[in-house]
Structures are given as structure tokens and as C-alpha cells.
Length: 151
Image 1 (cartoon, one colour):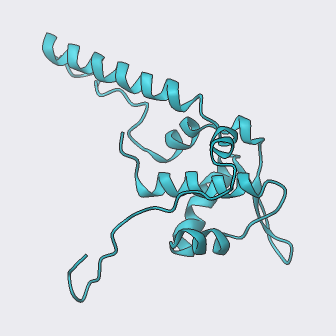
Image 2 (cartoon, rainbow, N blue to C red; image 1 turned 180 degrees about the vertical axis):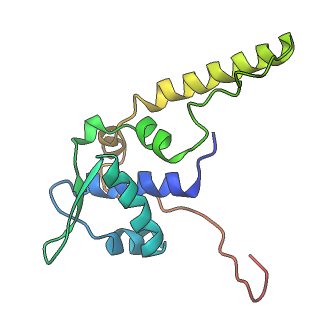
Image 3 (cartoon, helix red, strand yellow; image 1 turned 90 degrees about the horizontal axis):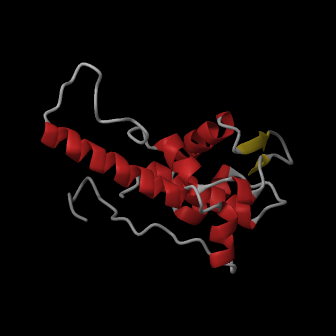
């Protein structure tokens, strides 16, 4: 399963909050740690806030903090929030697939269900326990330059 960059950044951002559990963190701090744009990360955290996963406060002592305990926030919940094609059946009501198409659709639905059975059992607390030193992995992505057109 390949996750979008947005989903990965949501997981990494929440992981940072999990590591700094009782301290508010600014989007700018997390963006700097993961080398992404503040405005991009702010949009991600806005969506996390609307879903009730994080809480925010403005002002001098502002920032983001987890709105739920780390053992109550699962990777599956985060993936469902950001991946638009999860949980949607590939079948439409007007479609009449032949037996082979139907069989393949059933297999793929079973695979998706199995993946989410696993993701729903991995919490932020589990991630923090597996990597107790607090160093969340930084994305290893290519940097493109427009001028040169190279990687």
C-alpha cells in the first residue's frame, strides 16, 4: 500500500506531537524538522483539528497538541482521513460485473479490509514505543529543481 505524501506527513506530524505529549508544538517546528512547507503542513493540521485528532490554541502559548490519548489514535484512522479512495467499494450500483470482475473486486475488498485490520491495531503509542528515542524517520524523497529539470 502506497500512502500519499500528505498522509505520511499527517502521521509524522502526529508522531512528533506524541513524542512531545504534554507540550504544544508549532506547525513551523514540525515543518522544519521534516523539511516541508509550513502552509502545506498547516492545511494537514487544519484537517486533523476538524476531525478531533488535534487541538490548537492561538497566541503566545499556542500550538498544537493531541486531543486524544496516543493509544486511541490509530494509523488506520489517519489513513482513512487523508486517503480519498479507501473504504470505497470499487463496485457501483449501476454496474453489473461479470463473474471474474466480481471475484477480483471481492479479493481486492478483502485485501483492503485486511490492511485496515492491521492499521487499526497500530496506534501512535505503538509507534512511539517502537522508536522510544523520539527520532521519527524523515521522508526520503527526491528534490526536483525546475530550472535544471533534474533530480
